[in-house]
Image (cartoon, rainbow, N blue to C red; front, top):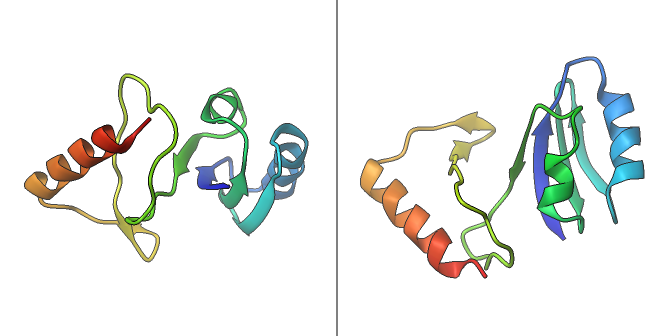
Length: 105
């Protein structure tokens, strides 16, 4: 199961959680905060893209994981440490993007 985190309008956490339970296959709640939900699901990424009540959704990729889906024409790599976005050396970012492209199926 893939792990995702998504942002939504603060104050709607329970509504968002209930809707994800109904919309996604094998939904498993990991963490619910005001404006952020972390969860696992076996649903396709295209399904997540169609959920209009989520502002942004991200797939959490661990360094040792192989990616088993098509990322499409474009993607963005985001690095975080303890839930805070962090800057990364451009050379390292380029290497990571190449690695992701080479390992997607």
